[in-house]
Length: 337
Image 1 (cartoon, rainbow, N blue to C red):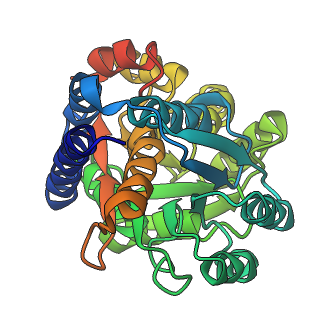
Image 2 (tube, one colour):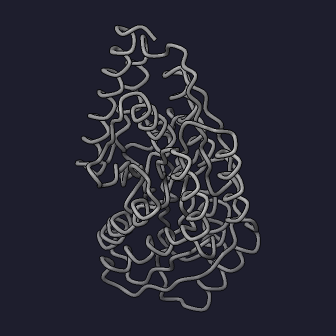
């Protein structure tokens, strides 16, 4: 790579780092901090010179659908902007996810971005990555564990702080009894979300276990919990699909005034917020969780840069309400929110 072209790329990447750190300091706002995405696209012009670097993204679910499809879009956009290669894969089984990391190591990738929904399952493979000299950035899940697995930084949301924000907003809405619906067993981030809500919510909180792979059964479980306790006047889901395919129909079946709020975005959630059926959604900006790790890995490989100073780079929480849902909905059509 010619020196001037390399310097232009490094200056552009440094600008992205400054934007990300500013986002981390702010912790998000009602607009969800979406300017960082638009800014990256605008700045991409000269930076996309071809490179022989290749990176793997390995997440704890199939990289498709409402949430992880946007993460994949972010990673692939970063690869295109930087002129590098990226392979995005995922599996909800921790052992299978670990196997995908091992495969990436065997393929001699130049860096790995990985989510840590189950940190213990990933420690062995990530130790192998470190032994092979492959840098790691964690994303989405893993804020409390990224240093212990040797990652150079973490990109994601502080789930406890996000839960705190949910509890505060539910207080403002005047609800008194909250049902927190957990859709994956063993995902520590989901427990942290409920824990955070319980810390700030001034009323009583109950938890219910539902199944993300069975919306019909989840709807029935939520409805039964609402019928068993007529004092419940709010439901907090931790996944956008569970909000619209399970919780909202259950609330409608019960037929009493129950507030619904959720974590994460999707077209159906945004339409429901716009219509007044969901109070708010917590936005962790998953596009950035795909985009920024590729930028950081590339900076590390090209210039030995690290980001965050030992602290995570926060992409949330932001809050989408009826005031800004229509604007964010337009961005979802572009696959960036």
